[in-house]
Length: 97
Image (cartoon, rainbow, N blue to C red; front, side, top):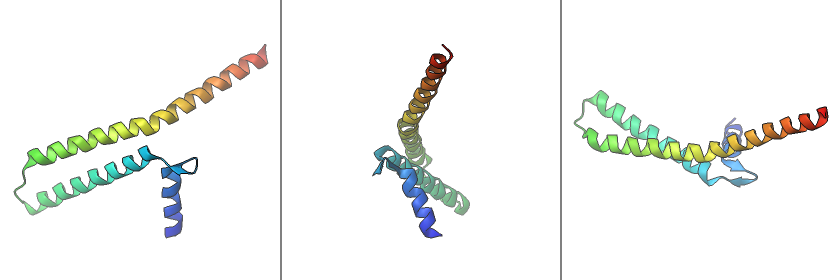
């Protein structure tokens, strides 16, 4: 079962047989984001004194990174889908004529 899960991650992170740099960075930024939120949650449960200003800055930076890498990774997919749909519409127009 673990082999199947790792194969799924490899499929997600690769594009045309090579690892996609944007997808790997997106994965790491999401992992770092949730680790940071986990630390904040743990500190909140334990009622520890934490300086929220620093954590707020880190979380904002991680949200920006996730948005940037997500736009880079999924933007290309949206463009490819748009081109595929546009190509199909043009083909049907030519067939009707």
